[in-house]
Image 1 (cartoon, rainbow, N blue to C red):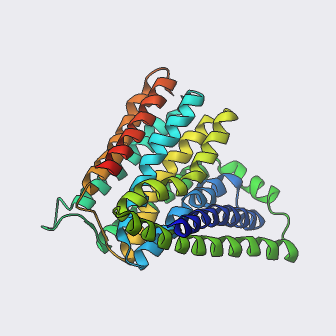
Image 2 (cartoon, helix red, strand yellow):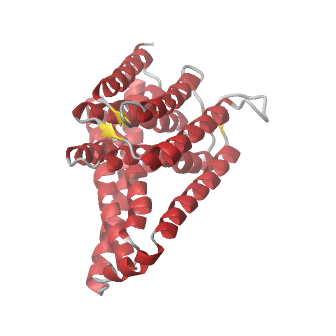
Amino acid sequence: MLLDSVLLVLGLGLLLSGGNFLVTGASALARNLGVPPLVIGLTVVAFGTSAPELSINLLGAIQGNGAISFGNIIGSNIANIGLILGVTALIRPLVIESVIISREIPMLILVSVIAMIAGNDLFLRSSTGMFDRSDGLIFLMLFGVFMYYTIGDVVKKRRDTLVEEAEAFAGGKGLRDTVMNLALFGGGLAGLILGGKLSVDAAVAIAAAMQVPEVIIGLTVVAIGTSLPELATSLVATFQGKNDIAVGNVIGSNIFNLLLVNGLCSAVRPIAVPLQGGLVDLFMMTLLAFFLLPMSITDGRKIVRWEGAVLLLIYLAYNVWRVLG
């Protein structure tokens, strides 16, 4: 099991570095094509922080390790709110922008409720506990709508400055720069694929050796590992006083995980919701999303330290209960 633990750490390291290289290369290529930096942030960077989850869960779905995929997707969303927002709010109270309260948090709540209903199959089918291919396609369509309105809103509000920004960032189109950026992108993609493969195989082996359900490994070790980009981004943003990035990064990543990552994985191969605790995991993920709304509109639109402590304690207590239960 020691070797599997080393391989898991190595795999997670490759996932993180691969995601970083992919974002760096893709961002530079986008700038060379004249794409404004704000649009890059809403697309490439947002995708990059979810790239580890996407890689490990797609490979898990392809290999038939649906429990790892389910645990990682839902566990990452629980960790993003309970662990990451909890820790960052403890460091410094998080001021919540009005657009996050009026649009982003309600969107996250809606998506979480849809995922909980789809995972429980309350309607249309008599069977329970499955994200099937039709669910995956619905999630992907919702993701397309979300991106259309998000980017469209930016273009509408900044129509006059987009051309100027595009011209300002259109330099560096030389062949040498393009080759370097393509190499970064390709190397990052390779790191994601290899890291995902190592992580899935090692997690399955560790679960078997410890006689622990794969979903528990996905909910805890793998979920925390693939949430490290969000944790690092939010901590840096908090220390720099950029609360909008810290909070927006978490909420955006959770929406990406449910719509894009879960959608693609379910479309590739249906993901079964574990009979033992799976519905409770979906409920906890949705409950934490609901918690964000009252926390964001009280105390002067801030998530203050005691609320961060509550989120962190809920996260720790829930994981202890799932592991021991």
